[in-house]
Image (cartoon, rainbow, N blue to C red; front, top):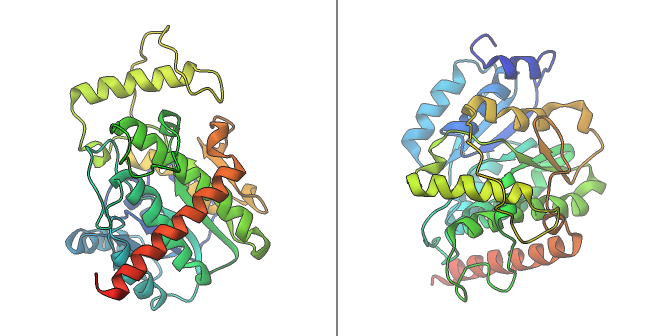
Length: 323
C-alpha cells in the first residue's frame, strides 16, 4: 500500500478485504477513484461504475496496479434511469454479492439542467439515480453489507421540497438545489437503514470534507465566493434553523485532496466501529451530529422514499412503453 495516501494507509492497517466485493459509482476520477484504489489495495474485488467507457478503462488500469482480486467496470449514467437499470442488470451478472456499495458520484452547483427523464439534474443524479441503482441491487446486499452515500455539509444549503423536487414551481437556486440533493442523500440513508437493517444491511451518509475535484467544474470565481459566504453563514445558524447569519465574515475555504476526501468513505466501508450500527451521518472518520434535523427526520425520509419509488417506476413504465 506504499502508493496510497498516508491517511488511507493508516485507516487500512490490518484490514483484509479478501473475498469482499465493493462497488463504487463515479469511480473514474477524484474521490471515487481514490476510494476504489484504496479498497482494491486492501484485497477487495472492485466494480467501477461510471458513464464514460474510456475513462472507466483508464481507471481500471490504475486500480489494477494494486488489486489482488478482480476489477470490473460497468458503464451507467446516473442522470438516465434507463441507463441505471441496464447497468444494474449488467452488474448483477458480474457478482453474486455486494459487501459495500459506495454511492459516490455526483454533480454540484449546476445551472438548471435536466436528466433524461426531466428531473432537476442535481436531485436526479445525486439522489434519484443512486436510489434507483441501490434498490435494483438490493438482492445482492446481504447480512453485513454496507451502503455508503456521499452527502455533504452542503446539505445545510437547502431542504428537499417534496412538492417540487424538480424546481418547476420556484425560481431555480443552484446552491439550494445542491443542498436539497445532499439532504436527500441523508434521508435516503435513514430510510434504507430502517427498511433493511433487520436483514443486516446498514446505511451511512458521509461528508467527505471540502475536496478539490472536478465536481466544481460548473463554478466560477463568484460562485466560489458565494459558496464560502453560504458555508460560513450556515455554520453559524442555530441547529435546525432555516435562516442564516451573516454577522461573521466569510471564512477562507481550504481544500483537501481527493485521497484525503476518500478517507471517511473508506472508514465507513471497513471500520468495525460501525458494526451493528446504521442510519448515521459521518465526517472526519467519526459519527457526526452536525446534521440538520430535517435531513434525518424519519417521516420526511419515508415520504421521499415513496416519491422516489413513484419517479423510478414512472421511468421504467415509460421505457417499457417505448415513449
